[in-house]
Length: 332
Image 1: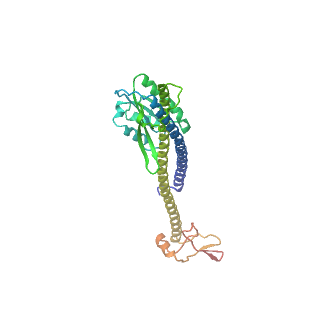
Image 2 (image 1 turned 135 degrees about the horizontal axis):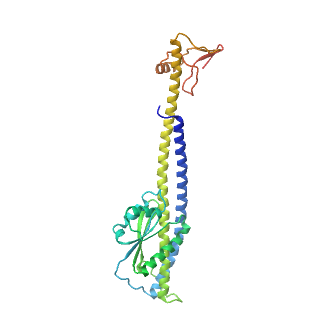
Image 3 (image 1 turned 180 degrees about the horizontal axis):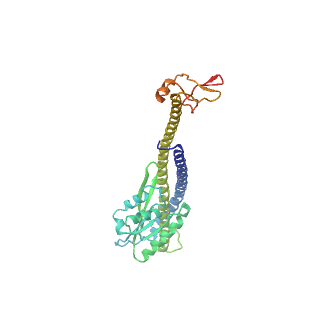
């Protein structure tokens, strides 16, 4: 017998504890993903308001055409923690050849480790907040880095690459242009009357553009935050299924080992009784007489154990009843 019941029981208890941890992680991920999706509606509304204001401002001061030079910077929103499958790998793969020729700003501690393993040169990195209310502060930090690099002439084009989860469609990677400003994306004002302004049109347009970029960074970060937690929920669901399968296997093994121990003990007792008979005498117990007694399963038990009709005074679970006579009375 290669295993003991105590060892198997300990493994079962360990797997049950692991299942409790997996369930807790799945619940936390679900709560965080739902919170981020709820906040996306507010960010979308804010971005739409800024876009409408920019559309009016463009009528007063059309933006200048950008230069033809291309110094690209990529803002990659990867995973902050583990147990999210290939979340970071999909973001890095979606960039393609631009990854080697662009300045890389990477969000996510776990994603930074994956990028380092691939030999990616990271120009700046930051951590994704553990809760979605911290996203606006993260967007402020990213914007400061972008504007500083633009002023130094290191970059003149910025793209955000992030994962987006949609119900029924799963997760896919999006790439969105942040800078230079694309006026064609702004809604054309339906009202032909120009707005009343107190700032020069170019100053107003720069301020609105900065607000719009901040809103887009918040939107990308929230999408990435929600998608990472959705990926973690999927991974935890898969782990839970594996735990249930392994637990069922161990419980089946536990029942088998218990049956083997019972069978071994019966054989040991029967062998002792047979040895006593072969030596020409029986050990007697005062007031207890062991007698052969046949039942419907006797023939099968006798054939399997080979002790010819004499059964041992013992009840082992529901597996075997042995007939005895105690003080002149018989029992089953």
